[in-house]
Length: 563
Image (cartoon, rainbow, N blue to C red; front, side, top):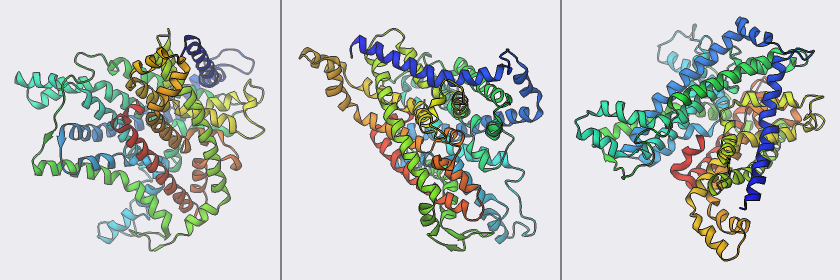
């Protein structure tokens, strides 16, 4: 790629991110700090902290994020150590099963958990059958424990992100460092605490920060649990009162501030990747074959975590087939009618078509941008190329609900980008939103591909008379196609099941994406939850296929897409 083309790509990305990343955030910030007569004020932001309802929402969001991250770490760290360092029965299969929670959006899993933990759910029915509970006074597990239910759902959904990062960090750790400590008489636990843990901290931070910000700003799960006392839901509930009310914008700014603060604080404390002894291993690590008993315990640990993680999935599947499921351990009757009704429902058919349309166009757009960013960053020495890469990765650090609210603000009537709403159709803004949110997956996979292809191949093509662009098109891109395909599959799958943008930007049923349709059905009376579960099963199958394909193409590098 010539220097002129590289500079052009840099300019395109700068303009794109200026318009569709910085501008929506700035529009929200401006509305939070400006009075109707355009004077600066801190009153609205101060009111967020003065209002006990908003304070409680922020505090609850922080608690959910903190406990979710700690829960994910408690699950992920031991599993990653077992996987990287030891050989045990069924290791490869169990590692794949540990990634199962990624195939179901957490707010869909919440539907299954409600069917299991509700007052008339499967758990209470089992305890009553075993005479461990009074049938006249069943425990309301989710009534007073909504926050606990949200934390459990998010831990069971998000731990694979942390697991992938920790496992990658352990695999790249130079074993010579630990061997040197062992030769000096350092016991195993102290060796892990003093040597291993500090060196893998960048990997823990990479996954932990993403988990924390995700949990802190999660919208779908609290909505399904009908838990309004978190900031993301308070923002969502305020959508109908935006015309003359600055407080929703102030709430978004506060949410953005704390998310950025937590990310930056963690980066300063733990984000240094240049610690002594860090980096890629200089000697090969050998896995230790455990005795049969200990190896079986490792296998059981993976199985236990996987079983807990698939409980929400099982609840969704059973509810999708249940004809009558009330106060029993399993449904009393089964039917396929929910699937036929779901596929025949006018809302679901249009929502599937909408999601396919939005996602395909968004990923095609993100693929062009992502390949350009990765090439400029890896193959050129253009000044500021690291800034380009950082811009592309910023959507991972900014909460989805913040960006979605920013898009809503920048497309209001009278705003410079109001033309992005075609009448009442949010088609263009949803495509842009999906592309921005999933661009990091494309950039990371393309970057990994470019780093693996020897630049000498392109130099040889140029020596034979090919232009830089022709060498890229004929030599490099075919070689990195598996990486691009894997990143595109992941980006497409997560775009199809995007929650924040879909819930906030799509306001009319004719434009609902699939996730908004599922939420609408969950809230409906009658067999709405069963129809939503049938769509949830479709979502599980869809994500299972795409994640399996991405894992086969990327292998152990799958975790780098979540950094």
